Image (cartoon, rainbow, N blue to C red; front, side):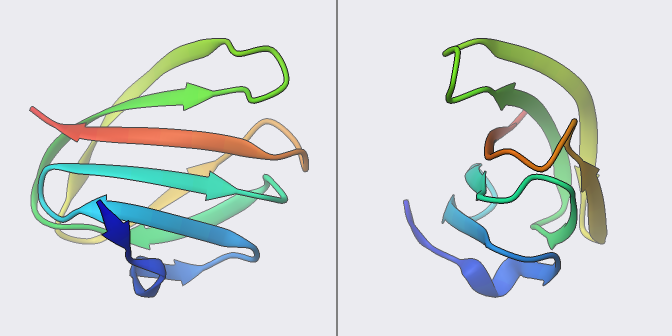
Length: 84
């Protein structure tokens, strides 16, 4: 994976590592909402809470367009997306 912060289309303090089209790790330092543009395909999404270590599956998303993500609060969160 390599840095791909250019995939962020809106949001503050969002950082992306990607193996484009295969997997993405997104660190949202301030939580909230953001948008990300990723390669076409269907991706499994897991939300990781760095405070507790808990990983929670989220609804799958379809790439190819800008995708909006909404996190539970303004604390930091990590999302892991993997292509089906």
